[in-house]
Length: 141
Image 1: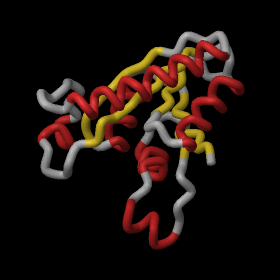
Image 2: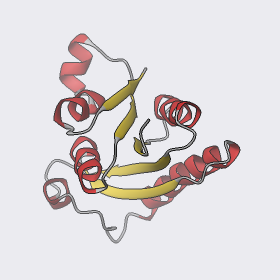
Image 3: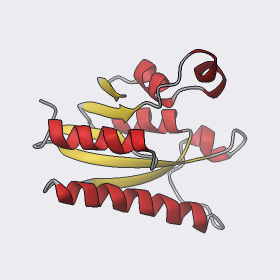
């Protein structure tokens, strides 16, 4: 059984389901919910993995805090204290970097279930994390 689990959350039903799965399946694990505020392709934070806040993005930060608060509340419902973190950059890269830096045993990530042309055009954070991660990844779909 994993001791430390990283669960990326974005406020979608799929990420909520992934968090719920982690809570129910691994009740004794330490769980960290990570929300990544996505940066534009030309944003320096995208390339640097910067995790600080940028002045003038209060609306994004408020949304991020609401997502993380919902994760903490979900943990409370299960009697589990969830650690939360926020970062800025490309979600796939930041999730992989954080999993490496944080000594995690497992990533539990939701997938929107796109396939074919939609996945090629839009990309898939879950697919990229699965391909690049040095720790096991459980994709909840």
